[in-house]
Image (cartoon, rainbow, N blue to C red):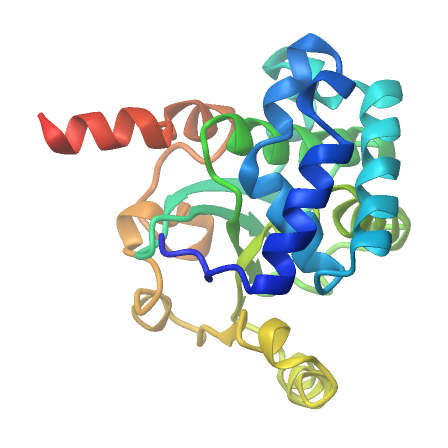
Length: 250
């Protein structure tokens, strides 16, 4: 997983953020959140603007003190992790953890439970050393279930991602979309900045096409892959980057 090198402007912003917000500003159990990559993500999200990045990171720190996302554990997300609207895969060909969002699948959870699931996934993957994730947007079931909570869920999750977990997306793979989603995507990409547009890819309508990005052994069965475990156990089996590095050296 090769990260984009920081520009001089971003490096200066990172230095300012590190000085203003040392890890000690957080609860001791949460100090690891303020890693070098975290400072860079917040700097990059505000184009290296020190004032704007400081405001953003400061707000995220206050939210973490109040919400305590680092304290979430598997037991607290057991119910949402058993649903099939959001699934955990393995890793893509670039090494990023794979998550699947399947609009239209039945979900019996509340908005709060769904949001807690997303936060847990973001926290757990970062604890294991992954700052970015690849998201498969699988539209195969779209329209099959009417979900009155989906719009509110999307709205709140997008705000949390933008405000408290910026730059966590490696790739978004649009998979098995209806024609109008493909059309809207083409229109939307015309208005995206180049860095954002480069993360969004059409992944076709078959597992063979999706395999351009992810081996089918790492793709949940619901998407046509071969991965049996696609809930909490898949996330637990995800090796930490440190462990993975040691295994490759052995």
